[in-house]
Image 1 (cartoon, rainbow, N blue to C red):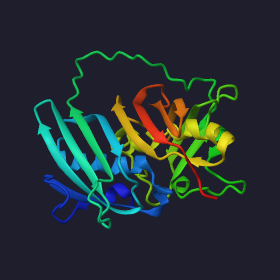
Image 2: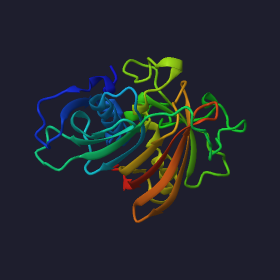
Image 3: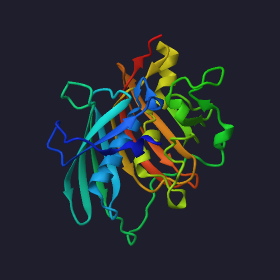
Length: 286
């Protein structure tokens, strides 16, 4: 069972005046020290979809601010539909650790949804970097494995990242292929129509700034991790198929704070989503 399938109604929320309170369970396999930020964001996005319950609207943007780390396990999601209009809606979600007495939220997010007008033109402003010169996924080295081929963190048991970065262009920049592992509990074992992903899954591969920044930082200070402070997404078109391509750029690393952008691509060259992210660099305990 996927963590998205665990989202269900909970006891009445005590953290806010939310219209609905849901709970999700994120197991240890989705952890990088704590729960991976994109996984928490994905659960919050799914909760927003559930509370809004509007098939005529689709998420067009979402923003999450990570206030405190989220431990693997149960997480309460307070959801408030701020507005549900004819052509758009806005939803606010607050995540709380139910076993923590601190009333401060762990994560706060907003989701903006809108109708799709097929009569309006499609105008592309970005070109896919995954052209014929980029090796196919299985020809690229897998990220997150040790010398014996074992995952270095639990998160890399559930996901498969492949480094497709050109050898002469690796400084604060990464091209990657991404898929979910094909095992029980994989959130994409049952894809939707036309092999379409659930849009709620996209925060997981979009949480990719660390892929661009940590290799360069590790060369200077040793092994580091990159907990997210803020992640913003703009959804452009559906993700389809097994693999998606990610191009991630870290604009700057200074004083332990990193920032940058990422773009997500289908294999046919269509843009899926763009992301802007700010994170911290923290040394891993040895």
